[in-house]
Amino acid sequence: MAPKTLTALVEEKTLHGSFVRDEDERPKVAYNEFSTEIPVISLAGIDEVEGRRAEICKKIVEACEDWGVFQVVDHGVDAALISNMSRLAREFFALPPEEKLRFDMSGGKKGGFIVSSHLQGEAVNDWREIVTYFSYPLRHRDYSRWPDKPEGWIAVTEEYSEKLMGLACKLLEVLSEAMGLEKEALTKACVDMDQKVVINYYPKCPQPDLTLGLKRHTDPGTITLLLQDQVGGLQATRDGGNTWITVQPVEGAFVVNLGDHGHYLSNGRFRNADHQAVVNSNYSRLSIATFQNPAPEATVYPLKIREGEKSILEEPITFAEMYRRKMSKDIELARLKKLAKEKQLQDLENAKHHDQSKPIERIVA
Ligand code: OGA
Ligand code: NI
Image 1 (spheres, rainbow, N blue to C red):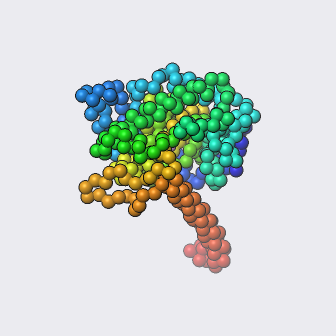
Image 2: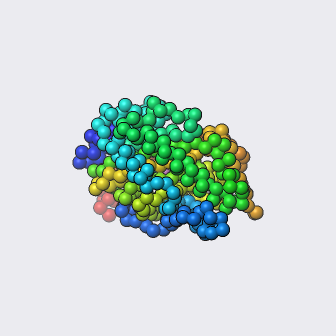
Image 3: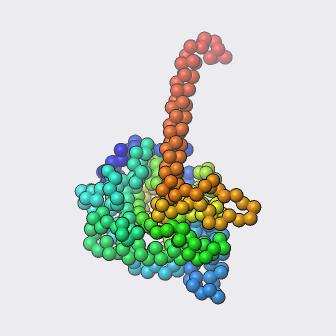
């Protein structure tokens, strides 16, 4: 079980055991060793059909084929709104534990505060606290699960969520066109676009080399827009976790990454970014992830299969089913990993006993 908040654990000299990861999952690259591989794309002029639009779209599409990640600047979301949103979020996480726990979502509540992950029951915990807002569709909004402190945060989050919905739809238009489809194709495939705003707070960590802020994953949805502060910690891999790069923080930019739904709809042409977040002992870090997902009943199947290609999905499934399969695969992998670890320990144990029973001269020789 994850602790209720991380406030007390931050003061400890050694990392609480429930956050210690197996060696193969631990960070390989420092949180502040930045790479410039991920392109930073200005959206200025994206609506000028005769002007810069074609050039901007080309860059976006290349990035989606390459890493499934890019950053956008000049995106039209007001800088004051972004800074208010970040400031209020930081103030929330600085509140005393009992205030944060008024919105405790352990026990399955839809929205609010929790430590580590929305997927509880993982063997190792993530070193983060989160607040989740289920923001779209509007008819599903439950304001009783939206923290009412600090004052004004609800109104700012409403505006933030609306502006990010607009930006996400604009980016999905670009990807639809790149697939040779009408502009609305990807948003329509989402049926009734769902949005979840997750604010990640990664406190300073006593032993950051042993743990992760957020373990390696792909986002399940269509597209994610991430706002991060200047500390650094978001990492991506293209080779199954052998090598990693740390995404360079850019003031006021959104890191955009594609999720599994976007990957399937493009028949694998656009990559679902494989990523994680690392932590450090110098600074706490804040990031705000806005997930744009299809409705649970939306169909997941390639919208376009190019000449000579086969569908990467055998049959159309619903997004709810896609998500269920993803989760059961994750659970199966965790089970296999646990088994392998137990076997390794057992083999080691057996070898020890075996050695002890050998005649002395054989060991000396
Ligand atoms: C996420 C995520 C990365 C970060 O919330 O899904 O990938 O840097 N966050 O916080
Ligand atoms: Ni993610």
